[in-house]
View 1: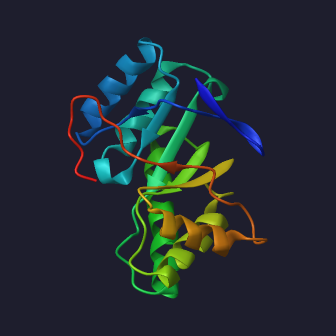
View 2: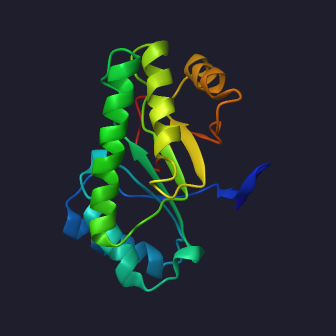
Length: 180
């Protein structure tokens, strides 16, 4: 199923998340997920296998417009607005380089994986994400693992200044206990 959002196409409710394993395993498991019918995927630099994931997407032969690809950036270790903005921009560049090398040139949804340490730093993260949206080919922007006060910071930072977050992705893993 999908969740409708007012400003664009629906966002899938369930997604195949590429976990922490090497590129070869990511490629193999992503291809198996595609063969099983998955068309929505989430990848993160934290897993360390974006190249393998991207290769599987390319190799699958499924037209890009039939897939929903979401990706996140790791840049939560910054202190202050400028540092967070700089680290987020660098994280986006590195992530897209890996994805592009594997054959994925755009994401449907681009997210911040975790919030930075302060409201000022979160605003820096969000501004850099907005600035990088076009380079990532992302239609939507979102966050992951943010609490309500952190989402409020992002919403106030984006008020009248570009895209607002369309989603706050939270972990759900069948059979695995999450400590969040």
